[in-house]
Amino acid sequence: MSVIELTNVNKSFGVDTSKIDVLQNINFSAQKGEVSLIVGPSGSGKSTFLTIAGGLQTPSSGQVVVESETMSQLSPKDRDALRLRKIGFILQAYNLVPYLTVAEQFQFVDRIKTQHNLSTSDLNALLQDLDIANLVKKYPSELSGGQMQRVAIARALYPDPEIILADEPTAALDSERVAVVGQLFQDLARQRDKALVVVTHDMRLEKYADHIYEILDGRMKQAS
Amino acid sequence: MFLALKEIKHEKLRYGLIIGMVLLISYLVYILSGLAFGLAQQNTQGVESWGAERIVLDKDANTSLQQSLLTKSQTDKLTLSKNESYVGQSSVVAKGAKARNISAQFIGLDTKQYIAQDMKLTSGHQVNGANQVVVDSQFQQDGYKLGDTLKFNSKTQAYTIVGFTENAKLNIAPIIYGNLSTWRTLKNLPDSFTASGIVSKNAKYTSGIAQLKSYDVHTFIQALPGYSAQNTTFTLMIGFLMVISIVVIAVFLYILTIQKLPNYAVLRAQGVPAKTLVQNTISQALLLVSGGLVLAIALTALTASVLPMGVPIGFNLPLLAVITVGIILTGILGAIIPVRLILKVDPVSVIG
Ligand SMILES: Nc1ncnc2c1ncn2[C@@H]1O[C@H](COP(=O)(O)OP(=O)(O)OP(=O)(O)O)[C@@H](O)[C@H]1O
Ligand SMILES: [Mg+2]
Image (cartoon, rainbow over all chains, first blue to last red; front, side, top):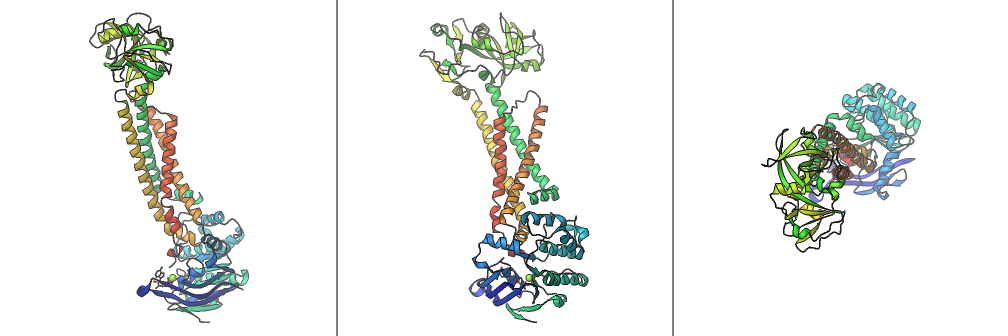
């Protein structure tokens, strides 16, 4: 069942001569239980695509449907609520609150989303998988880039979202960790029926994907 | 609140500095208002202790007790009730064995009238004979005791202190109470003058004599030499200080909020409602301001307890409450200004 569907989506910035078309006529859908990988060179529009799919930006034209809700018909407040309940964003480096310890990052989620977060044992298992269980008392500034990235992945997964949108989730990781994260993504799709959309340069993730798309100059084509 | 507290805990130095700044500003406001209130009190305490509602003075005396004189031919036409009392005022320099010379206000009273009768003494007795005085407790602090003597101006007559009374201040000088004939002696007046004016507890009292005018006590106090000038100066100083503190606190909170925006953008991307972030900012401002205020109150109390007696400082709870609420509102205002930035923060800006 498709949980994200983009139909004829265009996105351009600027007007007249300075106008650039970043996304052109994108049609895309993501299914529960599948990992979709989106690759493409820098500046090709991958992040723009991801933010539109997650309802952070509105397209210039075309339609975005998330969990049967048409994004353009929701109020900003409802879009926030949808994001909070359904979507987990894994952003490149910055999605940790600098003045909260790793453990407090999860406590904060408990405060803004009081239900349906991972159980303590599930969270502990996730922290074990990502090999960050021993870092819970540390502040983000005390973590390495790769540790931060893995905490950020755990942070995004903690609210147990249906949809996981990840932007370069493995940029700072070595091959061993990439394999862990790739396997985690695949397990989330296969065993927990999540939909994963992962934007990346990282070809090491290819073998965990069900579909691979390529964005080139704002156009998307299916690579496999 | 969660984020606000955690952030303060993690960034102790930064938030400590802000609390310190609030502390210093509000300390200054408290001390200034204490001084203003203390000075105002020392202008008026005496008059207030008389329970005066109206003051009758010569109509050409420019509302000044010091300038006013009532003649015997005027007062002979009056019969005063138990609510009225004659007062004769004269500025004097008091000299005695103890301490330096003290500039004081001599107030001559008729010992049978209400001010003298109702006067509360902390020790000693009322004036009941010639050459006796009851003096403000400031003399006690300067080392005088019952039975000590004082001389006034360049006169040779010695007056014996027979009693002490508290809160006897007029024009920021301690009051020396004596009788009206002593007052005449100090003023070099013949017996044909009775007093400087009449004080009445009756809000409707008038003398009925054309040359005399009855003022309500508020008008009289405003006309005390220097009184309204002092108050205006202090009010302006405190007002400016409040305005400056609004600006300083607002600027600090603004800068803080700007620094937090990238972080807020991430939280917004994760679906954290803008409301939570606004609440966080405002509750943080409240925490910082109340922290600063609590410390300022403690420091003010400490200062007041170590200030030498001579410094006129006085605290009035309603006034302090108004100032405290004012500073808290200032903090909230300072936190509300950058709220617009939080509401406008674009989650996309953090996604590369
Ligand atoms: N708000 C904006 N205003 C104008 N141009 C923008 C804006 N956001 C993105 N662009 C442009 O859109 C294009 C695609 O940007 P995007 O961030 O989607 O690329 P990307 O594929 O994620 O690149 P990278 O791999 O380097 O992260 C770029 O040319 C960028 O300059
Ligand atoms: Mg990008």
